[in-house]
Image 1 (cartoon, one colour):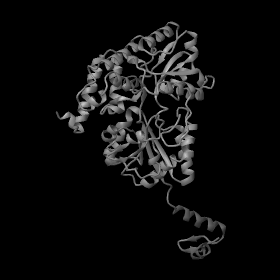
Image 2 (cartoon, rainbow, N blue to C red):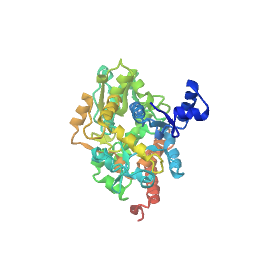
Image 3 (cartoon, rainbow, N blue to C red):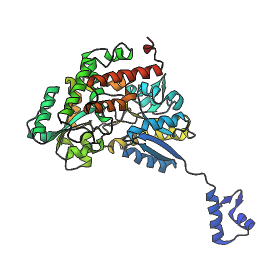
Length: 441
């Protein structure tokens, strides 16, 4: 084999340089290697818990296959949006960034028409669930890949079947029944509910995920809110849900450390046998067994959040989504990464190696719902709806603000009515900033 350096064979190069022998050849080859192009690394910035271990594994496989590395930059959830917006506004965005899909968020939080790349013609785009793709689409252009288990990440109450049997509890379908179960567990020395308030986002789920129930009680409410002909404040169902959530806290059902608890400890809390219930997604039972094999997934059941007597399944077609920054110098490489993730064998790998992922929103992907979760979906197959952080405009962008208000309500600084009126005020501010015609009246 002949090795060339800038057009000369190695022997020729050695003669020109007055070098000879193996050591001289090594020097020339080292010099040649130093001229090689540096390895390409894509930066991907995301909020905490949006990047699963399985995706990081796939990123390593992608690097092995293509030589393109992925540098994951994970930020705390309470800092992420501010940091991302600063980078986008300064024109220094990462190659890829994570964001919650939902048309309002795409416009207000990320301004995707300016900051993201149109992915409509990518080979995987036509295989994504249409309802999910619609939440990453603005003016007919698809800007993101939602690599997230939408249906499998439905938030429901997971409960310890053995504790429920031990204390003679039945699955609640009303708030009164839920409250009675909580009190029986508390009286027995068992913490009824693990509810982590400290991260600022989890306890908001109890309120906004009940959109289908609000819609059931006031048909067309989401449309009226979007048309600025209705408000959160004064709505009986919403007031009831928030008031009941406060009562759950006030009665000590969330435990003594709710204000300091974090969601990453949820599986540990359930596996301890000292907690009766956790609000989690439908894959939570598999996660607990994965983390703590002594507790089997079959020992954990699920039921719908019963605030406001809810019995409708809360579906959110939006979720953490991958976007490519329009200012990236590595757009083609970033597209290559997304296409790699979308390959059937890689989606199967993600599902198989992510305990909480039951499926992915792409045509032909596998599912692994537990018998309990599947039974819940089957029982309520005609009672489903879209959560309000997706169905109602200008809500999801203020998620952390709502969390702060609910925390203030728990500590007595705000009333339930004030929490709702604050949401209305922020919605109005966001709508006016977006020049929404419905708020020009």
